[in-house]
Image (cartoon, rainbow, N blue to C red; front, side):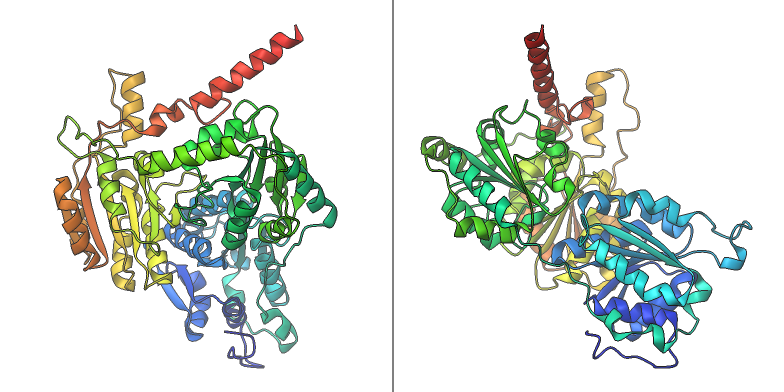
Length: 581
């Protein structure tokens, strides 16, 4: 909808009507919520405008759903949660969106102003609770401030002045039903808020081009900034000869078959590149904070992005280009920026080794001592039903570790840098509603599935045609294995009771099937895809030791996320100490 065809009622508009018109003007077609008396006026007006009200089974799930839609479409996601526990239930999902830099508008209502501070029902300091994990927070008590406050919130959410992320606006419930004068319904407030383009400055792009020409082993690393810039990225890699690594933020932007992408040689590429180009990507725990102990100590950095987190966090760039990634890559291609003396032998070796590792016949995946299949056996079977249009979602600890090395995915979501277990089922519901003609497959650990299993009912009720595959090892397995290593005489809270999630699915109106043998997977997936929404409960072994456990992730090292990076950092610090002595 646009502001021209949005219904309005001059002289008789309420605040709730104005809020609904603003949301509709942003191109929003779905709002995720859970019914609550304080916010019903907003939902009612949204429904009158034809916006689909998706009611989840938990407020955390509602925000996760908005998060998934925002990441998949590039538009702002909208969630509405009710007062008190409705808002506190949502805080975890808001924090996940904050660390993922996902644009969300979360709206709520607080206790009526006349009762504030008197011990009212559900009274907590809502704005104070969410302020640390929001880009913008606004409490509105006057009709004059409604549209200007919402406009500011949407502008901040989209990242026009800093990184994108969640914003929070709440209202007093008595305000929602009050009239709003025509004077405060300026049609300009109902124009869609857009994220303004930010082209690179000539000086910074010229310096970046020169640094690229001086390099021999350039490596680009994708982040959130490459979303929507796939064509420019492909052209840049082709013309510059840079190798490429994606991250969870950018996975799927390039085809897994792109020759310049070398995910199987990630460690070598990072350690040996002499120029690292970050594309809208923070140097956070997943990239060793840019440490010279993991990257080459002599490597130069070009950092491209729109916010300080993407430009200088943890490690300053030799060149920092404050601009959109798409426009910057196009300019570098136009300038024919490429190494003047490229190390083609290094590039060709890594590309060739990546192809060999990718195409090599995988060794047999042995079943565990418990007789259950290996997690990669399950993932191999999932790859057979995943096409280029599939939206792939992964949620869990142990199974996420296996999926990172084995799952073939073009459009991809996982639990993000917050490690927010329980996001998979709501993500899948939102993905299926957003793209009803595309295949949506969520691979979820049994522990994680417990957080959001009731959203299977939401999928049934809303017609969200997703396939939920539960990797069921009856355990919080990465924690269980770590516990048995460190505390062999204890197994505290890490083993789960055997559960039949297929039977739970059937009780909620979905298709359900249990699979215990690898040879039965293909037929079970076929039946599930023909009867969506469906839950396929797959028995996998708890004996397989995941890559994340081997990396020392569960050790919680003080300096880095993995033990190998921790050790490398300490060796570098020791060398530095010895050099000073």
